[in-house]
Length: 208
Ligand SMILES: [Zn+2]
Image 1 (cartoon, rainbow, N blue to C red):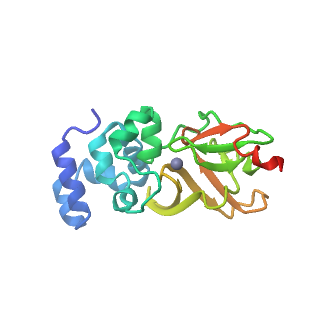
Image 2: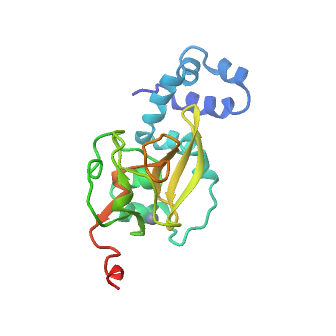
Image 3: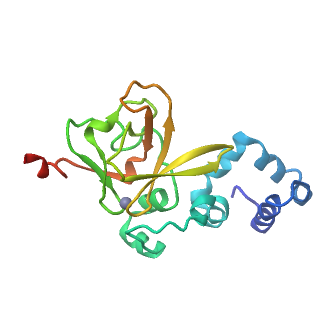
């Protein structure tokens, strides 16, 4: 077990949000070093999905404070009944799949639509996708209005989370100004688990 004492750890996290000194008094040798050193802190955060209690505690401050109303809204239990454990971890708990592991990482169809795994809303078109070499599916733009953005503090930096605007499902993060040479200088870095591909989701309409 990585954490020998959960009560101490939980108490420490409550304390650190208020005063650093009090936190250090709690357990200066192990906890202080583990939490404050940023590379190791990242390790702690990555290990969270297997520790639900900790995940709920500080895994996603924006999600816990998020009162956005989405057209598709379900309780965790309902999502768990619908999604696989991995889908639930990523879509509903802001998880991240291993780089290079995703179904759509190197998937480059000429046409078609990527839809939300949670609610089936169309999110990205095939021609939005490009090869970023980062290990996750990358899109330079999205279906208009389909993808929302939210500040996501954590891991010692401020990132911008992207979510499905229909169900609030976590897709990944967006990075700007990286100069990949696309018409729009954005990179939607998306988990394959969060999306499905449909060859002709909207093609029926385009026949007109
Ligand atoms: Zn959705």
